[in-house]
Length: 312
Image 1: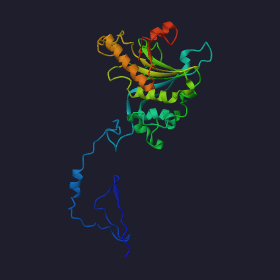
Image 2 (image 1 turned 120 degrees about the vertical axis):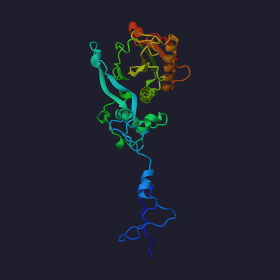
Image 3 (image 1 turned 180 degrees about the vertical axis):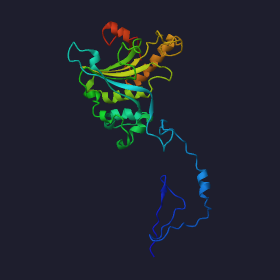
Image 4 (image 1 turned 30 degrees about the vertical axis):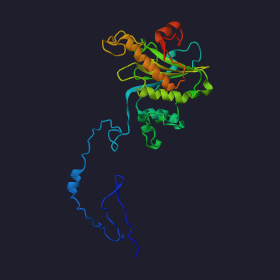
């Protein structure tokens, strides 16, 4: 006699206990005997853990609910990507050269914009798990909010001379004159050997450190945005800060960036901490330093390379 074919139903990816054994396609399923006493369906249902109810407006990440998440990992801030195109002549207006590209507030939206860069990157192991958790999904499963833009984001290595990318918190323009920047400064480093610099990887690491809020401690409140400049003889990467370590008009009385409650010594320590982390992101060698200068000093010197206030 032929051995009966056993069909094993699955529920939630696991075999169902006491599954029916089908002996013949014309016979009704029968349940094999077992020493265990089957619990009434009502009792088994009552013992199941209560399913958490969510509102339609809830933002559920995979870390909150691995089965009912809506595949969105929110960032702490909204960020806007800007692009500065090369000037065509001396009469060009800065506002006409500076273009707002896109604003995003989740990992998935960031991935949607930069998918082409990620797909070319071969080593994901160095990136924070929080950001790669969505990036490692099959691309067909990701809801690309900005999918139409993915082929329009040119890698930094392919930009024309005098082009810039800026990633700033929403509501902050990448300009010295912006009210949230005018009392601040920036950390910067120039890579002069352009042919040997993995600028696309470096810029991506800088972007991830910005949106991941890893350049500063919680409550520091200094980082406003990050920048990459493409010039004839070098690439320059920078981190813009709200202050130069001092209190500013309208900064309030608290221990916050620009506040009177934050001493100059602590303000400087906060900035130095950002500089050291920025240096680590760039993977600089011993003896290579990032420099910090104030926007006001740069404006007075007529150059983006004012004398450094301090280094890290």
